[in-house]
Amino acid sequence: METLERYKWMIPILNKADRDVKRKIFKNLRLVKKNFYPEGEYKADVKNLINCMLCPNMCRFDCGTLQATKSEAMSPAYKARIGYYITMGKIDPTKEENKEFVDLMYKCTNEESCKVWCPFDFSVVSLLETVRDDLNDKGLMPEYVKPVLNNLHNTKTVEDHDIFKTYKDKGIENIETDGNDDVFYHIGCISMRFPSIVQSYIEILKKAGIKFSTNLDKKECCGAPAFTLRDLETAKEFANKNKELIESSGAKLVVTDCPGCASTLIDKYNDAGIKIEPKIIHIAKFIDQLLDEGKLVLKKAIPEDFSKITLHDPCHLARNLGDTTSIRSIFSKIKGLEFIEPMYNKEYTHCCGWSGALHFADHETAIKEASNRVQELKDTGANILVSACPLCEVGLGHGVNEKDKSKIKIIDLSELLIKVL
Image 1 (cartoon, rainbow, N blue to C red):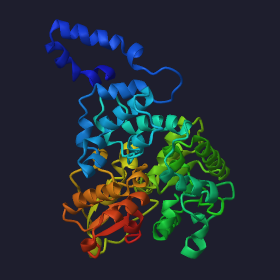
Image 2: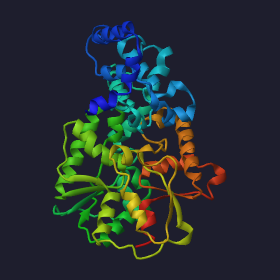
Image 3: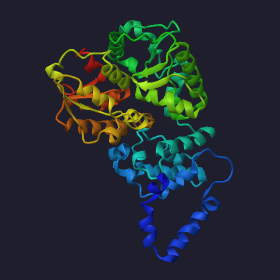
């Protein structure tokens, strides 16, 4: 029934078609594998690249990179077609004149708004990743994505230094495990750029009486960039090391301050055949549970200069993890808080521009996408923009123009909560 529901949009079109047209459509569909699949070995998801061509492509109206460039060449469907042509050999990716087509396979933010509209229930994000697999096998990974992979190899983080080891200089408390924790607090690489976020969450967990560890002396990246750029050997190395570290804590639950890390620890690891035993959730969901259970109490009213806010739903949290309620539930428990929903919210949120590979491949388009999102949030009339994703907070920061920098504040959920505990 679910399959019929997804394809029902095609029924009126087929019903109105002449008999000869119907015959031609079904004949061509039967010949798809014979005529439209490549020969030899390949990793690209050709079946769904073709399905993407059969679709009315409603996703183009909600793709952030397309809205930023206003160019159909950036639409999900166009990227899928180029991926198909590369896989079929109709575009030779080794030729210099075709470099822009190779680059197009990386000009995606991983926001997956395309999946919301897709009648075939896939995202072009995943299709582009399969095309990247084939490009990488041919040694065609673009040079501009290699620095982050070099960082992963050299520092075990996305930075050019071991950012987890900076906790002492930044005043972040490190809590080493005794092997008998209730919770493991998984801190993301980008989170470490914001010591106030990390320390705020540590204080919140301590106030709730949670036995937890952070293990910053042993921490490494979750491997998300390697999964995105399709260096799967490196990605699996990070997955296995994180699995070992997490499970050594004895924790029954993993909470992370980065939705991208949570999505990676759950979905990307499972796809790679690596399953972490404890349950993994975003920390917003855990805090909402603590509030409901009375283990955490918000005693104070929100300060007046933080009383009017709007929310940027992180794509990974809203779409990949399917959680659009935890943050809003927390907001409802804060005294004196006025929360204004932006037009594009929950699973229809628009991207900050800083996920995926777009900011490596096309920095200016990523900034434009970030600017578009900041404008949507400003349109609510709120000057306090709250999110619960450090990478989103980086992206939104790039989207604030010079004139607004003194007026617009981008803060994390943790920084809001610490004011009312």
